[in-house]
Length: 227
Image 1 (cartoon, rainbow, N blue to C red):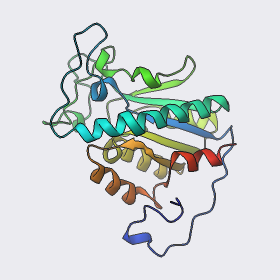
Image 2 (image 1 turned 180 degrees about the vertical axis):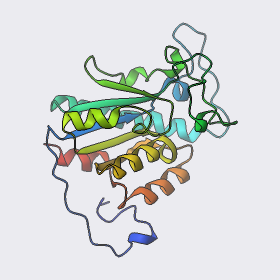
Image 3 (image 1 turned 30 degrees about the vertical axis):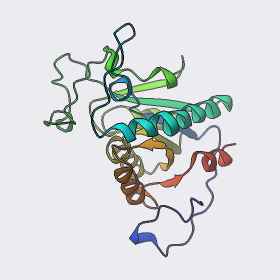
Image 4 (image 1 turned 90 degrees about the vertical axis):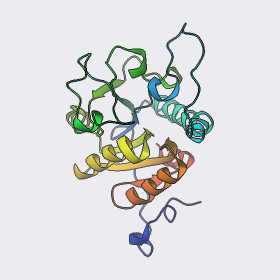
């Protein structure tokens, strides 16, 4: 596997190999997107048992438990050990009735997310909980850039390269990556630190984003470029 030639869509089959990224401690940040209790745990401490996994979601939970969450935790440790910036984004509304949500989070069906900011469901999972001085932005949109002051924060911190991980590859991760790319941030997506509802949706979106909105790498490939 080689990130320079893998994950290519039809558009980029014959494109030249990209150059190696040059990442520094000062200009590179890890952004963890929407890894929240509502998707993975769904029960507050002290409540009886975990609910059954909804039908069809078993592969997602297996990928998260065995691949994605451990990869994210490992990356967070790598960034913290190097004193590099780690930021988190989460979906949460400011009002209990969710009137402040964007339209994409009010449509009927699975995307109809009502996650008041102080409730258990809206919190980032304990396994990758934010550190004391790590920035957490709260959004009512899919894109972490559109719905928050994250753009200003990154510019103020001197960040040029943003490493994106989290869920869901084809929704909030993709929206955030596209927004960052449009603002001329250099974006890297870590393939084995992201997940969609199905592996097929995940891989489709990885191929769509790669080479135009971001570079797609494995965790180990990304770590090899860290200073």
